[in-house]
Length: 411
Image (tube, rainbow, N blue to C red; front, side):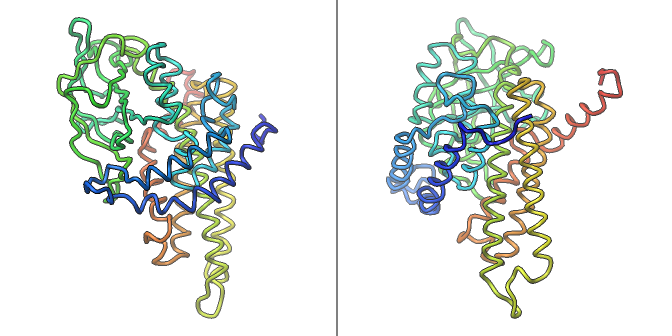
């Protein structure tokens, strides 16, 4: 099992790290401070300065060839393995806007995976090309307010056939990225045959964000914040017509598409979480060495030596588990990697949350303020324990895999 940094990706890691530290990080806070300053007062409209920051940074990344690293097994991507990409995702996780600068941001990466793997040539021309170029954004609509969506067989937004079209009706929420004014595409999971086998009841559709009958009801708040201009929106579909040709892969194959999409995306989330943990540990150490209280450096007070040591060890363990999940995906495929993906999906956010919490503690009141990124990191990581499946669901999958060893594979 080779989990090390390859000769191919090593120079890319160095270039990405330098750009994140010296060019993206200095502008990140300014970008977020611009939210709500649009002349219209709409927090989900981007200001000229926000666009200038993103456009200038993205232009530099493109010029340097630091673009679309995430797309494996495709001539449109960089030709990296999942293990190689994981190291880059970690670097991008250290700063809020970094992933978008390199066109490696969720949910677009997962949506581009869907289009690349399962889309027709017409789908790729209309949606994949502008997404790969970073001209538009997209959202993935799966979760619903009225059912326990952690069991995706419950998903109930209906899709009924009407001539050469499908008609979608129902609500979706936590549609991440749907608040962004550049969001042009929704990928929507709908129940199209409630009488079929539970994993054949659903289908996936490509729907323009401005299709008639779509109403954005509200942004969902995360610990009181609306995450503008990106947002996580509550959206209603009322008689939204979708042409037959915009059904992805085929009727009843929604679960197949979803699993193909979510596997790589979960690993990407986890490596970015490890990047946040690394950034938090760096901030913790710098603060502990630069501040004094009670006549001593903070690092010499309480249990801070143990806290720092434990953080380093736990980050290293989490990284290795994530790299193993990536390696299994590279060598055995997404299905074989699922138990490992579930393990890291639980471990990475919990590890990062613990490190960020300790960093906030060492920073005192400043650690929960807008003057440092730690509070925003904490809320993002706590939310990640729900995104792409809550901890309890992933633990259930890990336990079932373990128990199958003792049940002749029947569990």
